[in-house]
Image (cartoon, rainbow, N blue to C red; front, side, top):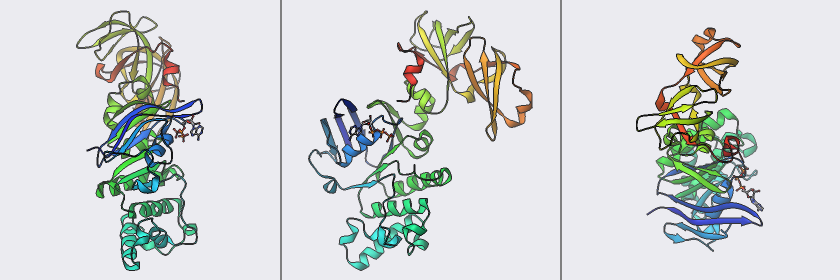
Length: 361
Ligand code: ATP
């Protein structure tokens, strides 16, 4: 039985449609992230599951039971917010002891449970410290321990890491996944950070303008996105305008604006169809027989250089080369760029144009 199910859920605030006909099943033990640009409706969705907001239409089911009308305190949900809300006058252990269920236990039991969860987040040695003396990451771990100690099997995380430094955020991602998987929890984690979503989730649900664009494993969302918006939002990609010359079961041949012909994955297209090719920078290579291009910029990225070049078709192509090969490339040089056919995905050209189809709002 799925632990959480949303059926035809919509939410309107006056004229604003924050959620539009959402259908989503979250299986028992799954770690799901709701990902999408600012304002796409992530928080509204998680708040309807929590019971902070009621849908305008549709059903929210938890363990098969319709939750409409059930208040947050009766839904047996753990909820961690972006802004850490610890009691400033209580130390770390006391804060964890103050969890809604834990506080009804005897003092001895409460101490044991609180110890156990502080240990889980590796903070036993900080148990006597007050929030003002803990780092942001440690405070968020205490907040997590307090929520986990309540024993809920369903954990809702609303941007739980976004108030933290980049480095702490990365460390805590792994901790979150490790801890929640060890406890066998079902997790719904809201984030606008695609890298965070890629590293923690079993499955990503990508939203835009109140709707689910698509949902799949991080690997499939990256390697085989079904929608152009996904290809552009998750990871980085180059998007090229083209017209189909031929498209069969082995490959597609596509003509760019300057008449050059490139190869891409097969698809169900007819000659003359307007399409968009998506090819990621790490898959673009300098080759002997590729697109004639002029290097416009070179950026140092650590282990690799990100080079952008303008092809004769006027498409801008980003590509990566290992730093050790960096001296082969200079701004203003001409370079021939290509890719293996399998790494170039093809989408029908959106009627409103590419920019509108990938716009982050
Ligand atoms: P962010 O990442 O910026 O937090 P989000 O994806 O979580 O954004 P929501 O907070 O769910 O987005 O908001 C979705 C839309 O609903 C937005 O246009 C927002 O302005 C609107 N909205 C949310 N809450 C309310 C409210 N209480 N009253 C009116 N409009 C609201």
